[in-house]
Length: 94
Image 1 (cartoon, helix red, strand yellow):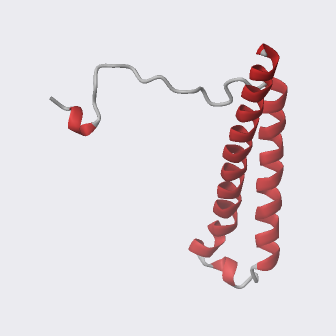
Image 2 (spheres, rainbow, N blue to C red):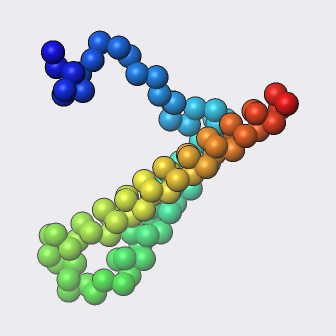
């Protein structure tokens, strides 16, 4: 009845986030993303003049941009590491 909303009884099979990647690589990706986020935030705080940072909306932009850059970094690296793990797994089976 509610299938047009996307609500179904069946369970979807999906790949887990950081599925076939070692915990050491996941930790390294997350730590480097924190470093990247802080670097981007610091860079934007340096580039934006202090007078503009007195406005509340402009003051949160460096943190938001840093967070978005870190999120994209995590998503891209997760995809690359997942594909690399799959290719190594297929190569080992052959």
